[in-house]
Length: 121
Image (cartoon, rainbow, N blue to C red):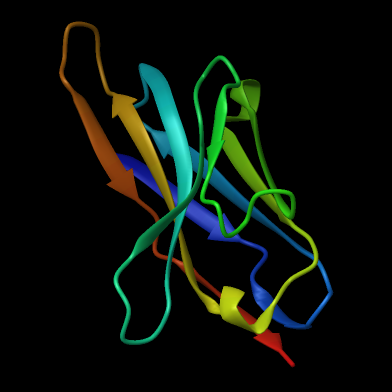
């Protein structure tokens, strides 16, 4: 089994910054793409950013230039640096990881429990 534990959410004023962390642990043979998603009240979950094991990144248009995703492969941890936060960034942020748990096994996706980010105007 694989666990993803997020931290770093909270309440911040518009224009402020937050840094989210997500540490993966458990039966990890190989950690592939990791990413952050978010879900605002009464909205569908949406992609925020992803990063491959090689460091290639992709961002939603709404966060480009403001958010930065990074990872520490030695620590099985992914980060999301969020700057110039806006009230519309308010959501529960979820970590996601594609994991192979043993050699020759298929890759499965795992989710963290989510961390609340609230941006006040």
